[in-house]
Amino acid sequence: MTDVLQVEKLSAAYRKNIILNDVSFTIPQGTLTCIVGPNGAGKSTLIKVLLGLHPNLSGDVSFFGELLKNVKKKVGYVPQRGSVDWDFPTDALDVVMMGMYGQIGWVKWPNKSHKEKALDALRKVGMADYANRQISELSGGQQQRVFLARALIQNADLYFMDEPLAGVDAATERAIMAILRELKKEGKTVLVVHHDLQTVEDYFDQVLFLNRTVVAHGAITSTFTANNIKKTYGGTVRWLKEGIGIVHSTI
Amino acid sequence: MTYSAWILLTASLVGISCGIVGVFLILRRMAMMADAISHSVLLGIVVAYLLTQSLSGIHMLIGAALAGVFTTFLVQWLHSNNVQHEASIGVVFTILFALGVILIATKAGNAHLDVQHALMGEIAFIPWNTVEIPMFGDMPVATLILLLVLAIIILIIGLFYKEWKITTFDSALAASIGIPVLGMHYLFMTLVSVTTVAAFDAVGAIMVVAMLIAPAASAYLWTDNLFKMIVISSIFGILSAIAGYYFAVWIDSSISGSMAFATGIVFFISFIFSPRHGLLSNKIRPSTMKS
Image (tube, rainbow over all chains, first blue to last red; front, side):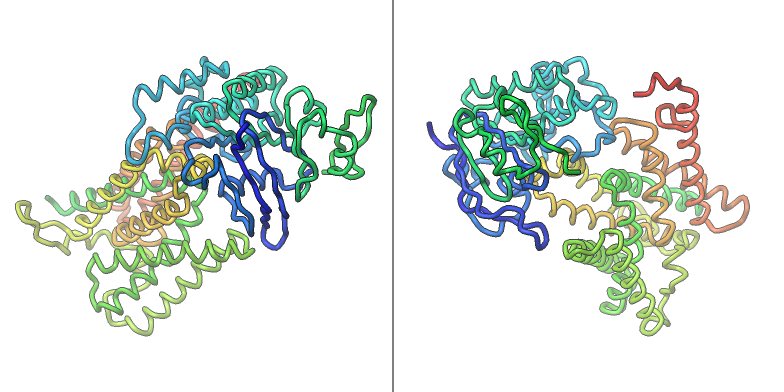
């Protein structure tokens, strides 16, 4: 397996607070990795720094052995649903088409074939009937599916998804996971910021414990252990039988 | 063309330009930046006048554009250094505006440049200051400048329509696919500045804010489609301008004031009667129908 992402000694700060310190890891191709950690562990920041949306203080990142700017088209990003204004005057189909703006290129307008592709992507996430629906009228789960369709249409090889399963209904969660597995089957690589420790084992094959730095990283079977969970979350995890942890909300 | 036809044309051009730019101001949640730029542009105009000793349109446009970008830059810089966004806007534009007022009072006192004029505009004088255009004849300078500015706006918004849309809706995705989000922010603020100063003569620094914000905010209540919103906003801009003019003639009062007042009327009508987001439809529609 080749590595699609290499991170070396990455650190980043918000204002004067160091959020990420000495973060190093590599992601092999074709894996489904979840990034877990307590609130404020720097999970979203990590993705933003990797994608160059937030400056890093030090460290190197290489995608497919190159700098990000050379391989932008091979990298897809699904931001947190709450990061955009859903009252924006547009419909679901239009949002999905935004995923192709990079491919379409400057100045040119999207044409009919782009529209067809966007409809296809909506169909894949089970949202074809909502193509012309104003986005503020969609439920949280439907909005998340639209975001996923927008990422699929980018046809990237490496995806970053920031909490795609947060606040969605069970049907959407199943639909999203089916698509992630499909992506994996096609040889694509997906990194997901995740918050629900109970589903980690069922959904992913790799886990990256993050709390300002990498606590542990590896295959679920060897790495998703009670010890590592405790090391990452400290004393805020309450134990249930079978060693599954539930995170106490620290809010 | 007759005297009032020129005024109506000029006012309509203000309405369209401000209507288009205003849509993106609203959607980018930057209504306050319009207020800031419309004031600090005064400093740009005064400095341009002091440097060139001329009141010609092109110098003023450049001076105003630079002042607008400078304002945007200062606000951005303060904000990135831990000052609240609103506070940085408030501090920056009042100080730049104050500088402009001081410079007018001390250095440019004898010129045809006074605070009253800058704040209120005087569209009634526009038809008398003309320039000769080959093949066309005489045309008011302000109208010509507005035509040029409108062409620039349509060109820049039209060419980069999808880039404006994506940077406005989801700047993180835009940045991740390689669109220079910050560069487009400055370009947009330059557009706002140029629009503001072009509309200056017609409606003045304070009224231009009404023309920028109210038609776009009204259009937002009528449609869920970005392109339609731009069209409706422009139409509301024209309507307000024309209705404002005739209202001013009727009660024999300030034209720019009446135009700004008309934008307020358009907004309140929209706010009450809009079929989807209006006050009435929210009252009438049973609560189960609401999404």
